Image (cartoon, rainbow over all chains, first blue to last red; front, top):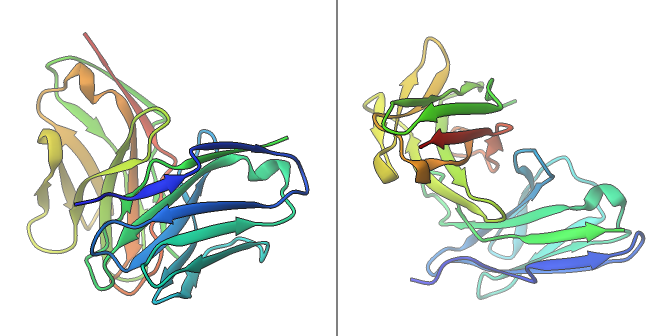
Length: 113
Length: 114
């Protein structure tokens, strides 16, 4: 069984740039969620994708957007990067209708200078 | 709205002693409760969950948690701590099966001293 994989593992951007993070879900999982974990804090829900559509969103501005592809992999795009966007971005997969536990990737560490 | 509180930023325990990491929650419906562990610069690993049934749930690596509805708590426990248990622990809640998001606490750093 293949777990959740994310790329890149680390990246550095400057304020105002755009970034794309990628995630491959665990085999058999059709739902992908993205979380932002700032240093010293718990993960915060960004959004969830199911059947290629966003079906839940947390308190994040529209410059955070995503995609899900037919093979259930996903992208997180962040436009107009701000310094506060520096964080570990976690992708998690699950089966829709499953009793809630998420399976997380190792994360992408974004630093905005 | 759903929320989670982990009142202790840091818990220290001697190896071989029992450990408890505390968590309280607030939801409007029936809570789905979870514990995750995070090692440095890594993602989160699922430990255990409570959905319904027996209030004492058992999970990975010898961990267990007790659901207490009247106290709205879901404390993580282990009878005998290992140095390798040292990590960051997160409690999380989902407000029933239809809720899209997990809400996480701020985390508790567990240090097991040899």
